[in-house]
Length: 92
Image (cartoon, rainbow, N blue to C red; front, side, top):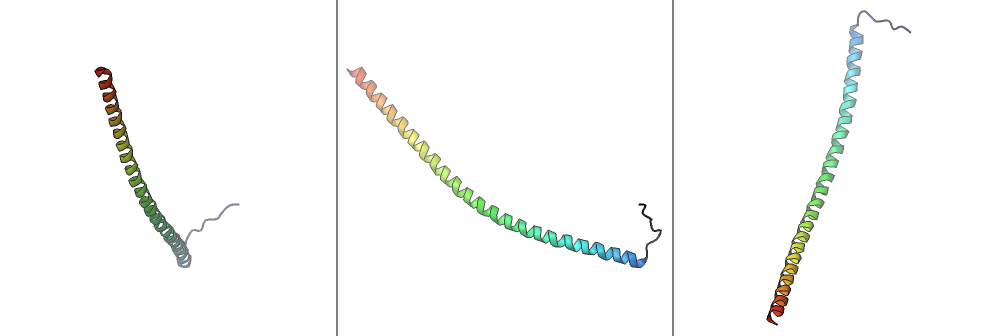
């Protein structure tokens, strides 16, 4: 089916088109407001996640310090034990 093009637009038709475009933009603006609200909620949730991750980081740092302390203590004990055994073997 062929569509006939109109040669001219009347003021009334242009006003109708203008109103329709304005309504469309109002709808888009409302949708963007809802999207903005959702992003605010997401930002709040990310802040909570960041706080949790900070607590986990603190715990991991404490665990890391504990592991280093245990490792150094074991190395010191082994060195002392080997030195003592070496002294006993050399002294006998």
